[in-house]
Length: 461
Image (tube, rainbow, N blue to C red; front, side, top):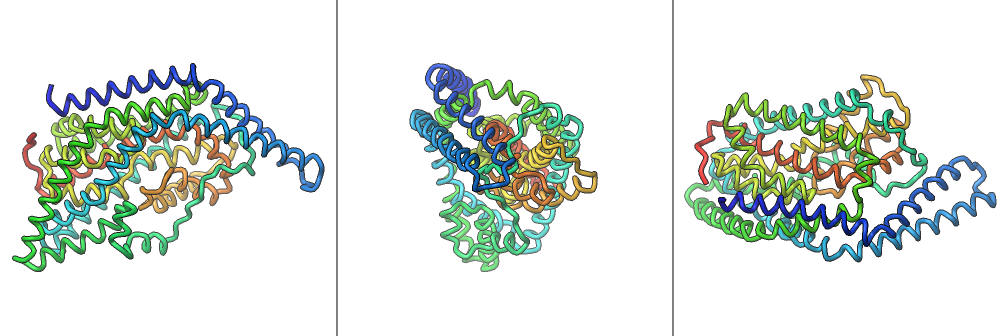
């Protein structure tokens, strides 16, 4: 067994063992806390519905219900705190791994992109590659959004599941994101490179790296020293990645055990229909992306997918596509993509080409509308899709980014934001599929742009 296959095997084994331990903990140690949290949640939902029907906010009944709600919220918070405390040894494993990855990603993007752009040479070549890259990203995003729209209209999970609806006044704790064009453009341009590096703002690092790389190429002979330096830095960081990835199985084990211990397998039975239909749609997106990849890359697309097993497993089990970034970059270069293309396309993909998240946004938005019995016309659904297309760009670093974007978008169509409460419980399970799909989408995008540029060579290990 090769070193890569060995690591993939251990990650998969850790995933299985994590699920088993999580289930045992859920049944043996966390059942009481989970029952208390569920009871408190149901009580809060019931009180919210009663409060929604009382117009006189000064009445005794209204005040008593608010007191009961505060007690229920306190009970839920106390039980969640105890549960989180007991899960700390497991969550610590995945937290350390994700921190190590975040430590690597920003300098890796900067070093590889500077070298890549400097090797490309002039600004015209950068513009040409950038144009082809954005053409793919926009097309893939529209494909993902449209597929989500079609599948949710076929399945209609919101109508079929008959879930008890939260009150339209219930607070989900999700901040709405209505990003204006001014905010978006301002966010892209860094005011400080050190701040962008410190906060892992990939898009801002990309912008600075483009300027730095083009300027390095422009100064000619003197620039070669900088190229050699950053090339060496990139190789050092990739060596560090190799060390960090040895810790991946432990992180996967901890992450899976923690999520199953908290959620249990009962959530799968309650939301089995939604989860099944969502993952079926995601599988269809994989097939479409691989099929389009096959039309351009021919049989080599299957070799690419084989190489992506490990990054996909890491992204899936940690629910973070960022965690898979260094390994994805390495595997793409081994596949035969030139470093200048990989280092240019892949970082951009992490902000502009989140295919899994795109599909989820249309699927989840219409699921909430269906649950509340709100009918959206064909024109409204297309408008929603285009709004999601715009508002989703460049917020990859925002926690629960998909839910944040959905919250801002559904409000435009008078869909209760409280409907997000239907998804918050299972969002970590869905995020795993989204993250894995984002890795697949970005790897195919990079390989395709390499092929279009005539920069795809034979694979090597």
